[in-house]
Length: 156
Image 1 (cartoon, rainbow, N blue to C red):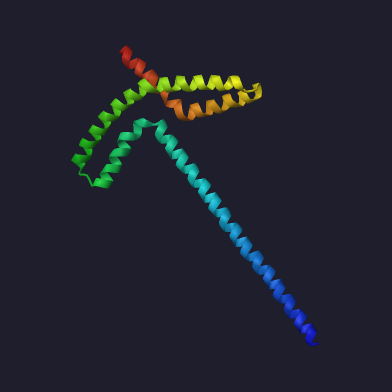
Image 2 (cartoon, rainbow, N blue to C red):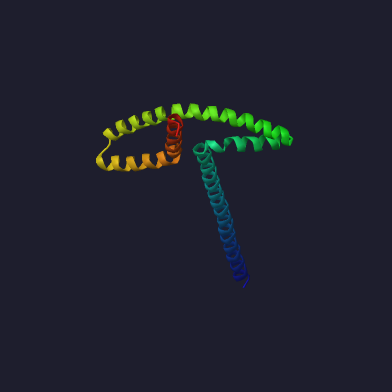
């Protein structure tokens, strides 16, 4: 009779240990999954934010002025003066960017062609799709700025 009680007690202890182990393992898995999902979401948001800033340099003066207004506690007069200064320099930087970006684009295009020559036709097709996605993401603003620059140069 006493042996039966001991056996029943041992079974309940081993069952409890297995359940506790499963519970702890499940908790750790949920924690790790949350960390992975949270990290992935953070990277995705930061990537979109960074690519948006790179693709829209015309928004920089407003963004910089807002940041300085908050950080330095600027008055409205200071904010207006600083915005004008930042805008003027941003326009000069845009001109420099317009001069340089086409050269960068040409160099990237030359690298694309050279890489394409090493690949199989199937790989080249996939490579061209990848390059097109990157071009749209990083250089879509060049075409609009280049057109505006040509109009400005032609005086239209």
